[in-house]
Image (cartoon, rainbow, N blue to C red):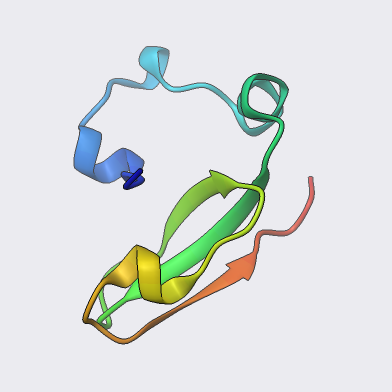
Amino acid sequence: MKKLSLEMLRLTSDEVLGRSQMKKITGGTAWHCQCGGGPVFTLWDDHVNPTEVCGNQSGWCRPAPQT
């Protein structure tokens, strides 16, 4: 399943769940990723493989800091 960043979804602020709310729903971990030098975005998953996230672009994913 391909994940989308919030910027790509163009949601209003009242449609976006906070980090703690999202974690309760998915039970996953937050990751900050960047593909091909584009903007950094957040994914929620148990584990992230940058190759799967970025496809044929170079990129990285790191665990997001816990708040």
